[in-house]
Length: 230
Image (cartoon, rainbow, N blue to C red; front, side, top):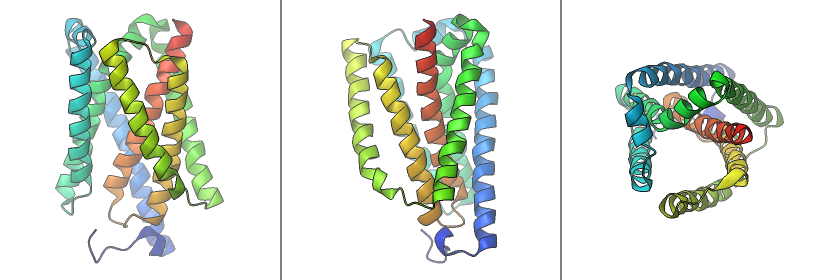
């Protein structure tokens, strides 16, 4: 962090308000950009290529590996002191999310009530995100204690995902429910960190962290709704 940067927790009311406005505006822009990019990919990418992404366990693992590597690079860029690099990081992460979401959204749009399930998942996700954010700001509770549980849960989930892809077993409904809980905890934790640990100029990086948690929540809510219709 820049030594001259003011922490949000130490900023005055006007500076905090500006930071929160910029952060959540960038989250909204990221979500809208994701919709635009995903819409383009769904129209431009051939069906055969989309199905190829799901055709083999090692292909999907390779894509997940690229997504993880790209996420690390995006996050690092988003916290750079260079504003241009920050936006490059956020833009790259939006593109990565659009690519990794392509198969599941294609299946949801084609095979489940003309995509109604996608709209339902999006609405539920936004309401949950709004509610979790409100909990942090209204209760003024510090949720940093969730970090250990989120890190451990993330590694366990990653291990199960890799094992499921290699050995070909379905992780099932309860895994998706558990991931919704993990994503919800991540939103609580990230929102708390934004209030207490971020600098007032780190709104792009803050927005990326929140966007990532929202997309994780959306992914597993969508999977839960799709499993009920299959």
